[in-house]
Amino acid sequence: MTKQFFGIIAFCTLLSSYVFSQQKTAGVIYYDQVIDLKSMAGGQQQGAGGNGGEVRVMTFGGLNGSAMPEKITNKFEIAFNPTGAKFQKSVAEDITAPGGGEGTGGGMRMMMRFGGSDRELYFNASDKVIESFELNSEEVLLESVLGSGSKEAELSTETKKISGFDCKKAVVSGRNGSQTIIWYTTDLALKASPMANFWIAGVVLGIETDRMKFYATSIEFTKIKDSEVATPKKGKTITQEDYQKAMEEMRAKFRNGGGERQIRIQQ
Image 1 (spheres, rainbow, N blue to C red):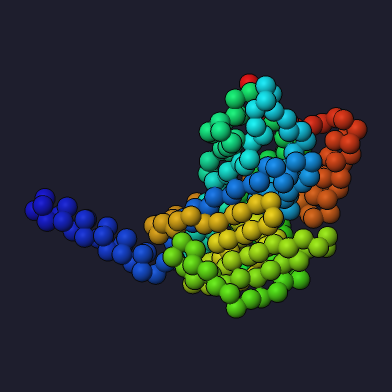
Image 2 (cartoon, helix red, strand yellow):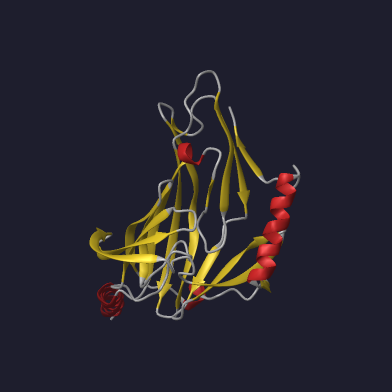
């Protein structure tokens, strides 16, 4: 009787995994974001998220003749099921310097400024996105729209296979003449993008600029609880106007030499 019981449990578990695998309606998409630090030196690059996550590289310099770090790699993930999806960072930054392996590169000094904490993005069946993050030491919820920065997009017939899925290409032109390449698939049952501004349809599995590459590395189909992707109830709801005002105040503090949030990596 006991063997039959455990046999039934094992069968049900395998059946459940098979169903999720076949339907592809729940699981986790894993991403690597690789930022070219050399090209960012003295400039800015938008990080993951819909409205911010700005990273500004303030100074780069080698100590004792050491080489400047070449890149920084972030790992993210999107968990999803039929009720919604959640995007979040999964692993902290990993800095690579030429000849020095992972880390600070033997005497390398680097200073970076982050205009906002790591964010969580929540998606549902609509094009609405809810961003959860900390602003001025307060948890806030900001509503935005998927693809708000992709209005000037040129669709292409070019395709690419990413993590086993056929993806279509779109090129988004920015106001300053910059271009962002998006690779998206409609073969997954969700609407999402690791950078909510850049989206055309389905789920974005690849984003590429001259300074950054953001690609899905693998997809694991497994059961995801509704509570894992539910929009948080804790946090003050703010408007886009509130957010822009807060960011302008933050930039003014930076320009005046105050209120800096810095990360120093030094040996």
